[in-house]
Image (cartoon, rainbow, N blue to C red; front, top):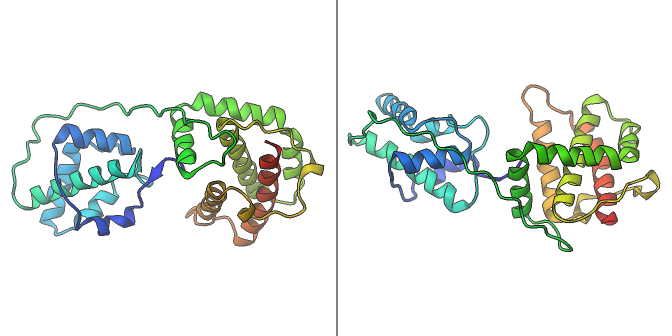
Length: 253
C-alpha cells in the first residue's frame, strides 16, 4: 500500500458526480500520475467500443490499472474520474473528440520526501507519502533495507525461529522491515532489538493507529491473494510475531 488509493468499487458512487473532460493533456497527466499505462486515445477508443456494446463506463475504467489507482490527494482522484466520466459521456452523446493528435507522453512527477513525524505518531498521510517515496526512489528503499539487515540481525533470527513456514517468515520479515524503514524515515532511530526486548504478547491496538491499519491491510492482501493466499491460521501467527516485533521497535525509538 502505498500512496492514497482510490478503490475502483467507488466508481459507481462517482457516476453521479460532476463530470468534465478538460482535454487530452490534463487527462493524460492525471492518468500517468495515478499509475495507469493507458494513453488518452486508447481510453477514447475503448469508450467508443463500450458505447456500441452498451458497456457502462466503470467497467472500462477498471481496466486502466493493474491494481488500484493511486493519487496525491482526494482532489486529484476526483479530477481524474470527472475527466474520465466526462469523456465517456461526450463519446456516448456523439460529441466530437479529436484523436488524430497524439497526446504527448507525460513523465510522472517524482514523490517528495515526507516530513518526519519526529516525536509524534505516524499518520495515514505520512505512510502513504512514504510508500510513494520508496516506490519512486528504490535506492532509498534499498538503503533502509541494508540498515535493517545490519542492525536487526537478532530480530530476524528470532523471526526465523518463531515457527513460521517459509511463506509466513518471508511475509513477517517484509512487514517488519518496512515498518523499520518507515520509522527511520519518520525521524525515529530504531535500536537493535534483542529477544529479551520482545513482549510476550502484543496487539495492534497498542500501536499507532496508522501502523496497525497498514499491517492489517497487508495481511488481508496476503490472505486474499488469488495465486498463493496465505492460510488464515498462518496469518494469525504472522500477526502475532509482527505485532510483537513492531511493538519492540516502536518502544525503542
